[in-house]
Amino acid sequence: MSLSADIVPPGVVTGDNLVKLLTHAKDNGYAIPAINCTRSVKKSQLIMQRSRTLCVNSVRRGKKGDVSSYIGEGIQRIMSGHPFRSTDSENIIQTRIRLYAFRELASCPTLSHASNDFLAIVYSKFPTDMACLILCSSSCNAVMEAASKNNSPVMIQVSNGGGVFFTGKSIKDKNAAAAGAVAMALHVRAIAPYYGVPVVLHSDHCAKKLLPWFDSMLDADEAYFAQYGEPLFSSHMLDLSEEPDDENIAICVKYFQRLAKMKVWLEMEIGITGGEEDGVNNEDVDPEKLYTTPEQVYAVYDALSKVGDMFSIAAAFGNVHGVYKPGNVSLQPERLGKHQEFTKEKIGSENDKPIFLVMHGGSGSTDEEIATAVKMGVVKMNIDTDTQWAYWDGLREFEASKRDYLQGQIGNPDGPDKPNKKFYDPRVWIRKAEESLCKRCTVSMEKLGSVGTYETQIPESGSAPIYPFSPISNNPMDMAKTAANSAKSALGKFMKK
Figure: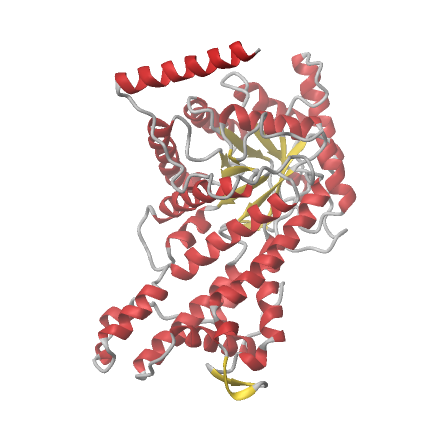
């Protein structure tokens, strides 16, 4: 049974509509893919950064011309000298690609020969954070495109590092992560209605050391709530799994009390996910700690349910972040069923799956393991590593197929005077990356069973508001008008009956 727009409207969903959506997923045996849109483009982002460096150096040498050609030159140099592999870590890539700060343009004493007009073009086309902004919004749009095409809800999430990335890597302000997260959320809110599906805005892993970031996002939620009657984000995650259980749960309760006032969903983690994620390294952890016990899960449920019911638990069952071949990770999703049974018995529930569960570290999982986890009550699965590769792979394939057209602004196999702008224009190859990401998201939606669970409602052309932010009014006259109009509408519907 699929959801309709009458039950859960398209666009960013929060509060009661989010509860309806996740309950529908749990009751109907599917999970919603959660894509880290500010992380799925890191390899491509590094290429863009290196390309900007080439642009800076070209300006220093006094070269003038189309800035896009320097971007293409940067890609060519990287492709020829530093080919990437899916197993390369970000640190390896960053070591290979030593970057200059693009802001050096503003203070470089050797730029006296470069015209102010040219510098203005460079800044307008590629300021320090532009590549990030283009790529991040690009991946957000590609994910929503996949959801729309597959009649599926989707979650778009931002990590702390992703928030910094969205703001711009050159910005060293302590609030950069929160500012970037808010910027991403506002972008998605403005664009989501055009895709006609429910979109959940979520912030990912927040360890104890990152709580100031969490606090700032909640400040934004509260400010947004005061203006618009709903929070900016749909949900947030606290990952205090490195802390003792008692402290983990106590901090979660404290924040959940604040979130519940705005009907913001809380995701928490208990038990450890292996591998490395956003600066938290659990690669050498005791294997036994990769499996959460039913008693641990119930302790979380018991504490949080006294505050509200809008929460989910990421319980470890052998999950590992990163890239692994199927079979190399010892997942035991059947353990999730034990958690449900234990809590059901404890609270005397008639519901076989009283807990909303979440799956992390899904790369390398077999289709059977994923299906079992969903069957046990997993309503959300994080997808990051695979989508990172997919976005990069689209760009890689385009460069390989059009290499002869990307060697300069003029001249290609069709003739020495033929222009190449339609090949090196960033909008062309970024779109190829989007298409590749869209295809990979489709695979995840199929595996999680979310395809066809929502009736996509694309708005009639020109009907969606260009500025979808309508503050609630505190003016007594405006409030009276709103109440009168609501009463009039209700009376009209009653009379028709």
